[in-house]
Image (cartoon, rainbow, N blue to C red; front, side):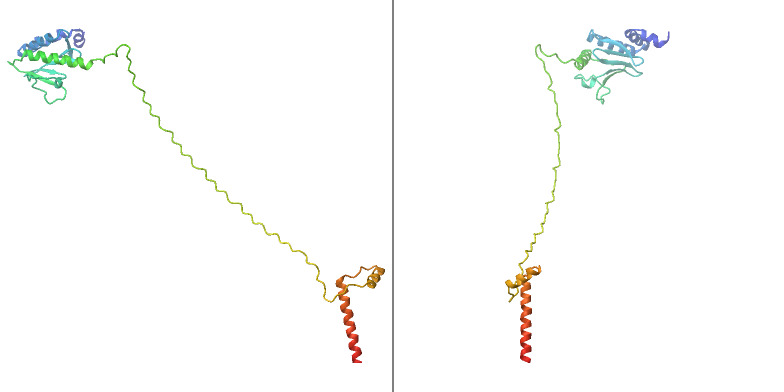
Amino acid sequence: MTKSVALQATPASALISQRIAELGDWRGDTLRRMRALILAASPQIVEEWKWMGTPVWSQAGIICTGESYKQVVKLTFAKGAALSDPARLFNASLDGNVRRAIDLRAGETIDATAFTALVRQAIALNRAGKAKPAPAASGQTTVAPAKTTAAPAKTTAAPAKTTAAPAKTTAAPAKTTAAQPPTKAKGAKPPTKAQDAKAKAKGATPPTKARAAKTSTKAKGATTSTKARATKA
């Protein structure tokens, strides 16, 4: 069996006792005395062996560790920065945001009452950190309202743009030229009955008023010519 396996099989309390015995000087005596004060603060404190040979005392979480060095025995409280220390037992690791430590040198003693109060305060802090929320009273149910934020639908419809070209119709004005009645020739005389009868006898179309006028004009011209000739003769 290897050494590491043997250590895992050995109870933590036995390992701590073995460490105290191995120290064999003032450091062993100091660690034994402080161990007794810690265990006397609460019967539920558990001893552990961690980090390759460091004694640890816990209840609802780590209370403190007991480390031995050449010049000091150091008791480091895991949440020491949150603890009230009116007796000013903490004298090391004072700049940390979480831990605080007590360094004990050869020949130094400690206020046992103040130290016991510090251990019990650390236990209370561990318990508060692990406390579960109180259940709701019987018949009372608290339901967190569902919060739903629906984004408003945003629809922008482009307006229909229809431009109808106006119907352009240009009707050409109706141009009607009425046939004018034939102009009567001045001085024209209508054909005589004798002329109509003569024309009918020949099968010819009776002369119109225009032809009659022309014939009359020619007749007048002939008469005038005859008169001129008679005058000349």
